Length: 284
Image (tube, rainbow, N blue to C red):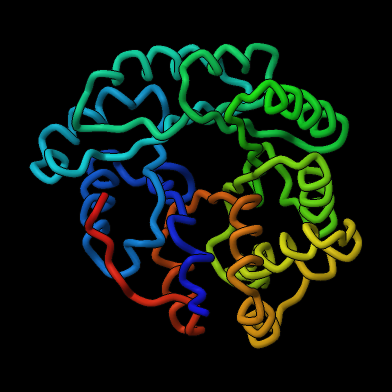
């Protein structure tokens, strides 16, 4: 089968966030450009801070392309920040026909459930250790109550967040899949294979795909860590190529998306390995 569906709409555009830090007007324009360029079918939503939602909507309204195909935005509130800006932004954009709010992303905190009333999909970022366990339990309770909630985990380092190695990430995948929750990742997945890039360790997209498949089949954290540490592009490509259509659907039901500030980097690498085609999608 074609591997393309496995990667459809997988990579959310985080151009305005570190380390990319693109100006918002540049990010909006380039995101709209990419909707009619090669690899467009693998591009997800544009991620913007909730505090910039009004400006993003203004920029969208000034672009003729959004008349037929509105700009899709996910509104982000960083962990340890108040969620009220997301509440206000969704209310302000609800009747704006040039933008579609595809969801809000917040950190797990005491008042995160206030965004459930917005009636848009919600993504909640969790940490590690006891914080992660409590967060997953809380999110699972909300999902049991039929809330549309996905878990988020950070795979790249920040000034306040240590890079989670294969054991930490493997533990997260084990825990989130045992809870039956879907997840997205953010930060660090700029390449498709695990390795050191510019002197820094980075997780690989294909490693995550294979590890997710293994976790769904019952593999536990130590086995997942082994997959996440694999550095052979040939081996990982072969394992992905063996996934059936059913396997791919199961993986994507769990691993819904990830944010990347340079969306073309992993897509060019996937194409070089023959795992995606350069097909544009113009219908959104």
